[in-house]
Image: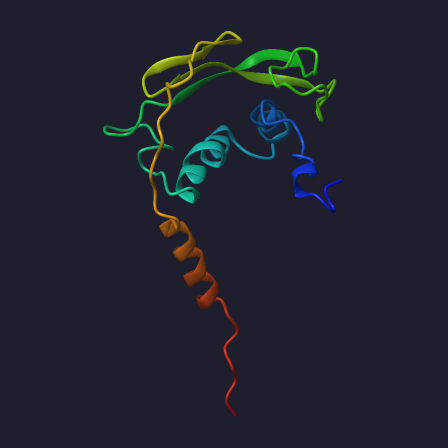
Length: 153
């Protein structure tokens, strides 16, 4: 699909709604990452990569009041019949997960609570940010430092 018409290219895969729950299940619950590493992977590190840190990705004075309250004791089975996405299937169909987001607060306002979307169109705001975060410069420098040195004889 889309070989001769790029507008026919499929949009990739669904599952964005469930990805954090799956990461919690397969990462934290299976002992592959800690709860703190989960927060770093999904918040702090991501904000740094997208050049939005420290206004996003941390809890501190001056940062946006964006928080997710996570309940590790709640279980559910992922299904296209119950997800909110407007797609008829789920790549995680039938997966039992233990740990779900219960409440989301965006910029200090309740946006999601107990499986109900409260945020409304226009609640968000565009964030202007430079194209390249300092994170990438650090990776470039690390790569240069680890480059094999030429041996002179």
